Length: 164
Image (cartoon, rainbow, N blue to C red; front, side):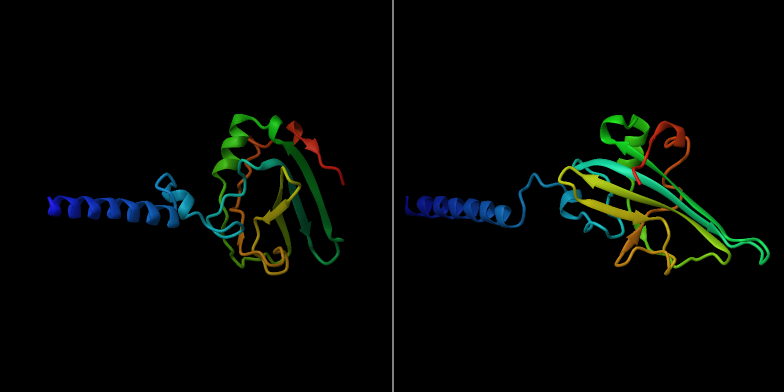
């Protein structure tokens, strides 16, 4: 009889210990992906989530050209609200993850995409697809992958022009 009480007490104590550890270390319903998610703004982090409300997609370019031709440059910007995104656009955004910064710079000009995500609380997060040291966003730890916004999924004529 005494031995049964001891085993029963041990099992109750073990169950309480497991419950306490589970609470302290994260619930058993946490997915591995949630526990192992990279910090925002670092390689592997998603740029679009449930809090994302809209985005601005800007393309910036400059071409130096030959010495006798003046430099040419320009930019375009398109605005997309969450409610106007197509299924294909949502799929691209939800799968989009930042990649490690590369230091590649071109010699006679540049072109890059810049994405600004606006969250429900008004927070803005900006990313570029260039790691070139003089074009990189100050403090950036990662960048957008090249060609992240295919023209057939994000056509220029199907978006609102950004407010400048």
